[in-house]
Image 1 (cartoon, rainbow, N blue to C red):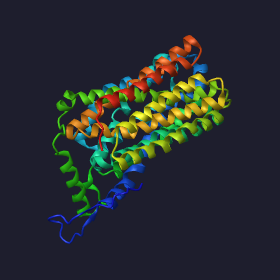
Image 2: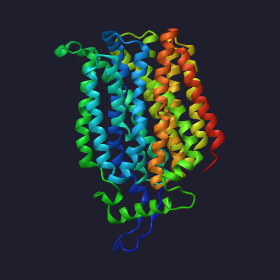
Image 3: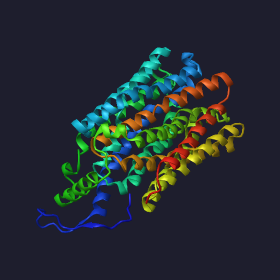
Length: 440
C-alpha cells in the first residue's frame, strides 16, 4: 500500500511539541491497519454470498431444483439486501461502525450455515433472502467508514485496495470450495454442498467478535495514531466535507440527479459482477472442465486477473486525477469480454480467455466508480446516498442471475444471458461518459 505524495502538515495549534506531520506516512499507517482486516471481512462475506454457485454443482441434482429455481434463489438475496441497506447505513452513522459491522458479520455467518439444511425451493428462497437482509449495509458501510479516514483524492486507490476482496474471494474461494466439495461428500451423513455452507460460515461468526475488539470508530479513537496525526487527519476531512458544493443531508442526496445516475450505472456494473460470481463455475463446467476441484482452481484465474486490474486502475485514476474514462473504458472491456464468452463457449481456451477479459473490466470499474458519488456527497448524504446507490445497483444481482437461469432453462445455453449482461455493461459506459464531466 504505497502512495506517491509526500505532503506534510505543519504543526497544529494546541499540539505542543508536535513536529510537522507527514500525511503520506499517516495515511499509509491507517491503510495498513484497516484495509487488510476489512478485506478479510469482505472476503468472508463474498464467499458466503456466492458459494451457492459451487453448491449448485451438486445441490440441484440432490434437491431436484431447476436452473430457474437456482437463478431465483441466487438473486433473491439482493431483494433483502435492497430493502435493508439504507436503514443499515443510516444506523451505522448513528451507532458507529464497530457495532454495525459486528452485527452484520455474525448474522450472515449464521444464515450461511443454515443454508446446509435447505430441502425445498421455499426454504432456499427464504434463507437466501435472509442472508441478503443480514449482509445489507456491509459494503456501503465500509465505503462510508473509509470516508471517515481518507480524503477524496486518495479514495480510488483505497477503495481499490478494499475491493480486491471481490477478486481475492473469487481466487481463494473457488479452490477452497472445490476442495470441500471433492473431499467432504458423505462425511457425517451430510452432502458435500452442506459441508460447504457449514465450513464457510463458521469463520464469519468468529470474525464478528474480532470486529468489536479491533476496529476504531474514527481517527480520534485510534490508539495507534499520535495526537498530532489524529488532529491532522480530522482537520483535513472536516475541511473537505464542509467545502462548497457538498450535499450533507439525505434529502439533498435523494434530490440530486447524479445520485440516481450513479445508481443506474452501478446497476449495470453489478450485473456483470453477479454474473461472474454466480455463473463462473457453471460456465467453466459448460466449456468442458470436469471435477469440482479442477473447476474451483480454474475459476480462480479470471478473479486473479481482475484483482490486478482493479488495483492498477484505482492507483492510475488517483495518479492522473481522472475518473470518468477509467470507469467507462473498464465497463466497455467488460461488455466485450462477456460477448466473446458467449460466442466461444464451444472452445475452452478461448472462452476462458474471454471470461478473464470480462472479469478484468468488471472488477476494474468498481474502485473508480465509488470515487464519483464521494465527490459530491458528505455527512448524512454520504451515508444514505452511498447506501441508496448500492442498494439499487445491487438489484442487478437479482435480475442477472434470474434472467440467465431462465434463459438457460428455456434455450439450453448461457450465451443469450451473457449478451444481455454485456449490453448493460455497455450502457454503463454510455451513462458515465454522458453524465459525468471530465475532471482532474
